[in-house]
Image 1 (cartoon, one colour):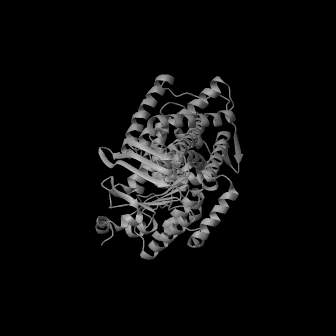
Image 2 (cartoon, chains in turn blue, cyan; image 1 turned 90 degrees about the horizontal axis):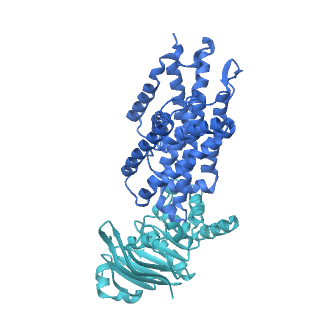
Length: 309
Length: 236
């Protein structure tokens, strides 16, 4: 009845299976949401479909791999450091690729093309450097022991995912909603020129947005790397496909929409893998995307955006 | 000495020159207006002053410093604040948030609160709408918000780009009453307007711009009396 090859989640008693699947799905979806949040933030504030974004996911995972393998860093050090590192990489790449275009008010298509070229070069460079093979985090980085909570099996990695995602999402929402800086970012999302006239340094604000989005992607990369214990250069690419699905289903630039759509996608993928076939989960994601675009091109959750956060 | 002076400023979009070798002076405490037809280069001149577009040639001197080529936030930090054409309020933020952004360069909370009170005294309508989204207000109210937002920054020079454009006559009168009040308090203003008669009435000095070049300038009342100006811009 079930495809036992689909994953470790499925070695469970059938009675709690659905509940277990839902928990696994929500946790996977949380990382999707985290990743999509950064993507929607760059799009919402900087108005660029930045295809290099997936690379920061890869970068975060590899930084964590390096920190844990070569420096013996524990995961609670590797996660924040790798995330910040990915954020800094995002600032540099964004500056090199896009600042010039932004100053010249270049058409969006120009930015899109530049990021396509950029991301191909980045993945090629990364693959040449570290090789195309899947790499594993050092054994014992996080205990494989699982807790039994009300009949549900929850691993330590999953708890870390839950806590890290909750903290990052809460921090981002507080920044956007509760601070003057967030107000400036929301203003810039709506009218970059007028924001400049207020005295807001839009170049620096753009760098901050790049940093935050790279940080979120990087954190996502570490958490997914940890969850599946598989790290390879193109992991960011398959994540980008999901990022697109989530931000389009959630509504472009819509923070709340990205959160909900990310969770939904995670749950649907796990359910598809559990009850249909693991190989179908990506197809399901794209069928949802097409269905949403056909019926509600503005996304499922209306038109609110980063500006209203 | 003038607070702001433009010397031979040329601005081009691609190969098309929108403003050619433009000279202009704004003395401290003066209201200077620039009138001209749609597309004559008024807004381009304003955008060049506030740093939204980099002039191809010429100097823009504000209080002794050449500001040509500075970024908008650097120009704003010098106290040169622009109310842009089309108002450009942050439609998806509240009125209060718009005002807060106007004081972005001020960090002292008490000072921000004090300025907010002053602005709300000047624009009592905004007080009733503080929590409302700016985009939900009428054009006239949005214009008041855009002006209030700029005043939150206590401009040394206020640039007003077409403040009466697209407004109901009642609001046009109200906006010009506010400009007159600001003038009487000693605010230095550079005003760009298509409503030439109202602009010439409030201004001390006037410039007439045609296809990117100043064709006439002088005391506002003399410019208003010029038969060519009367014919072209004042409907008489």
